[in-house]
Length: 76
Image (cartoon, rainbow, N blue to C red; front, side, top):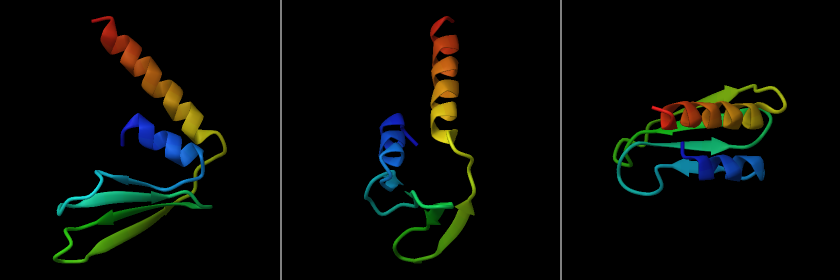
């Protein structure tokens, strides 16, 4: 999921990736627990919901990890 979607989660908003279209997509609902749903194409209407219990501060921790990876790749 792109970094701008992480800002939506930080603001207690949900996010969908990729947005729109007729292919499979993920939706993330910022609740307790966090809920990730994988949707198949609209023709099948199959979806799998997965509750994820994440610790406080997980978003910031992962944002820092992403920054470290990007920095390491940029040094190549």
